[in-house]
Length: 72
Image (tube, rainbow, N blue to C red; front, side, top):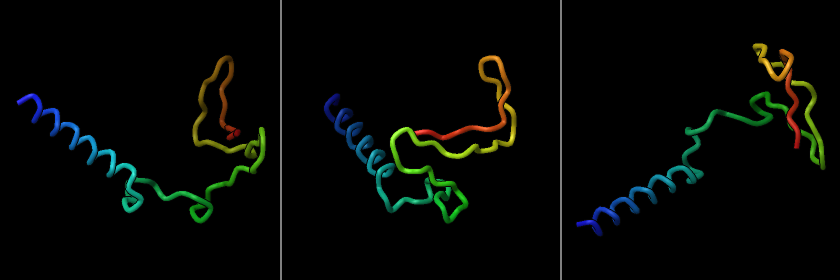
């Protein structure tokens, strides 16, 4: 009985992992990319995006911020 439950658990896990990695399931994600108005971060070592405005302030350490930078 334990072996059957173990095999069923492994099978269920395999099905879930496959559905997460299957490229034919695009509706799991929000649309993204330059065609959707996203910015592209420059390619390079230690590159970063220009300042990106965010809709609300957020506190960090001793200040409040309304822009972020995306770095690689």
